[in-house]
Length: 243
Ligand code: ADP
Ligand code: MG
Image (cartoon, rainbow, N blue to C red):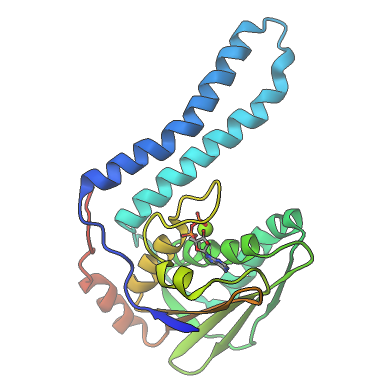
């Protein structure tokens, strides 16, 4: 089952977005508040270990808010030229501890070409991190996630392959739909954010998935002349909601 994801889902109203932010952010904040109240009561400071939980819940809230905001209006602030393989090396380093924690092996086979992109490096990194994280989360212990790259003169491709649980055709048809998640603590935002960013830089995303066998996400990114890419990004009207 192979499907090309053409458009990130468009949001119709600002209120839908705002309501969701409020909903998602409220839960971690309630936990934080509760523990802070407990700490307040403890004069001897015995509840020091709660700080870890407090900070992790706050971090989660922060990540959710920034995902929402980035979806609503991705900011391409600092455009620069960089090699595709360099950004992938950074992503592997960044996500290696996460993979280890899940008992998943994270491997990379990066082609040696110096294929370059010209865009906001942090945005592209965020887009790819979300997709690699999903691959790790779909994979059970002892599984493998492999990132590899291919490139020619005009395009660079990133293939993220996992041998995790895969998706049914029905699940596959819903991927990239805002708020679609099958995870207990999922937000259903990661893929939408990634698709929005990749769409902005005129890339394309393909999913190939079989239940029980795994998934491959292929991201095809345009390289080319710096000047052309700059003008195409600047001519791009930000799609959808503005806040
Ligand atoms: P979240 O990770 O918060 O659930 P995402 O938008 O990142 O939200 O992903 C949406 C859903 O798509 C996931 O909950 C999962 O069901 C499915 N999904 C995404 N990537 C994969 C993958 N590599 N393998 C299997 N399912 C996936
Ligand atoms: Mg995700």
